[in-house]
Length: 114
Length: 111
Image 1 (tube, each protein chain N blue to C red):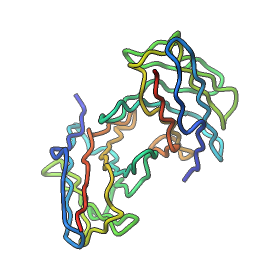
Image 2: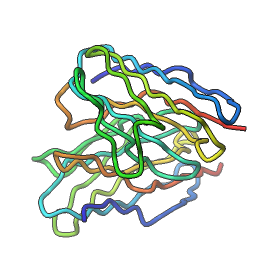
Image 3: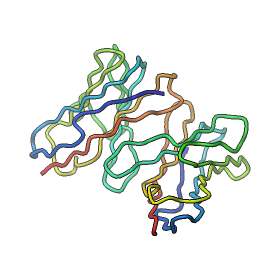
Image 4: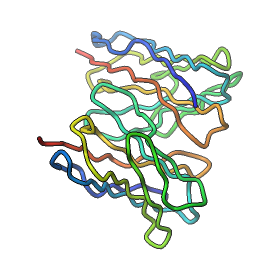
């Protein structure tokens, strides 16, 4: 298993600003994943972050809006840029030290944009 | 296209009653299957998983799930629900390339 720590756990932000969410895993992992969970919805994959390479974004998500860093095998950040109220969601970090079959999640970041 | 379906958006059960949450997947082969629970304001916690072998899998918190290949189902069960089980439950499938999550079932437990 893996213990994944995410911060901040919640934030209220002004529109037009940016927020960086941090994700720390207690073991080395090849891939880390960022999801968005809009109110009352299921999880949508934003991007996959591999250490040492550019993140791979899913359809509908772009690097300019959601830049991701992956400086080492235990850490990643997701930035939500130029925020609007539509970005209000829970953002979840996920990883699997076992190679990608399972998914372990951080506690999520609840973002409210006003 | 691959998908995971949870037909029940919301379920209400009495404390002490049994529970079954339904999950169906659409995929050519048998994917890896999971159930997660999400309490309000929290991330997802893994309840149980099925990779292969015995089709009845036991998980944490007294939950179990049964894989039925003929029905492409992976239903979650608990014989006696506790008030603390009130949460959102997500079924998920991993095809080896990507995770697919169901839309979730919200469980309310009444005393």
